[in-house]
Length: 177
Image 1 (cartoon, rainbow, N blue to C red):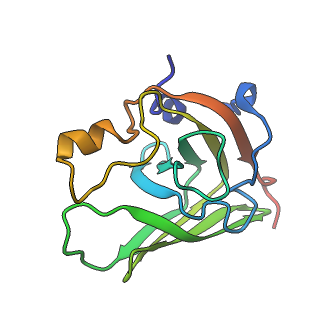
Image 2: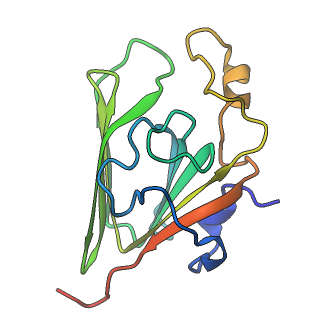
């Protein structure tokens, strides 16, 4: 079975997963509303970034319980946020603004709870996969009640099995202004 981290290691378009998404997070504003960011991985050597999303409470993307954004040729990746009183925070997307330009792809994500956080990415190309990480419940675990092990078992991670059901891709023209 394919693991989520496998999508970070493989080059290529992954056309075998291409299918129509309800909304495309790479081109449609607010397609990621109510999705939760679980993890971000930046590989400086390969200029790649990966972001895992929990989609169980997402408003627009209902084709799976997990989403994965893979950006290649990363030129910028920035997280800004205020200090939190809690050890764990479910960062819920309150706004997503993707832009495809001739020389790259950008994504600006605003998250809550207040005072919130922001994730901004710029890459030469991007892919977004939706699918299922088997064994997850109907809803994300309660971060205030469950212990760390129960929380980890209830969320997708880089080592989780992943069955993609749909994907979208953007690869702006190279050398264009």
